[in-house]
Image (cartoon, rainbow, N blue to C red; front, side, top):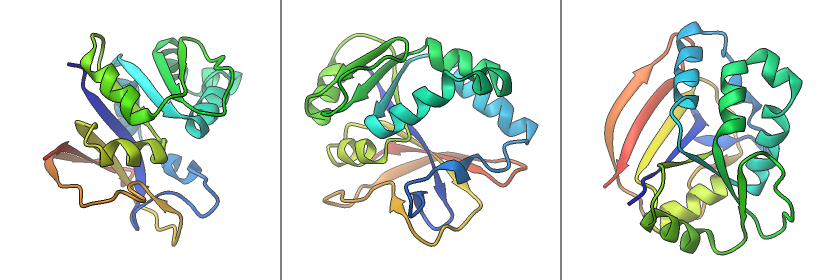
Length: 187
């Protein structure tokens, strides 16, 4: 059975996007060498990346750009090379390399994918997708980066889950830039 994890950043006050849907604040203090090595190590892990449409389009436009290749060549190479799945009912063409477009119900599709063979899967960003799959208990591991910034508003990562989601804390790691990565397993 394939495992599904998610990796996302949240502000100190619990938002994964600000009032305008922007996630750029999550990349502040990225000049910490220890943090950069962590990000590169995560990108080198392999597996299948999973996105909702909004995050997919943002990631595709960034990681295929010359600026990404110059600024973070290791991560850009891995992001472009890895297998990707995007969930969308409106997107008609997924042109980023190695991308499969799925238009069915995400929970049904992910349950099918998890039963099959293949590499582990990870959701990057994609808060709506995280909330849908968390509500159905389809995510095995949650990696959440708390960024030391308060946004004062926005959307939480678990907007609209219908019931309490209990998780088991397994580790935390603090970085010099103030980011703290905590890992949780589904309880």
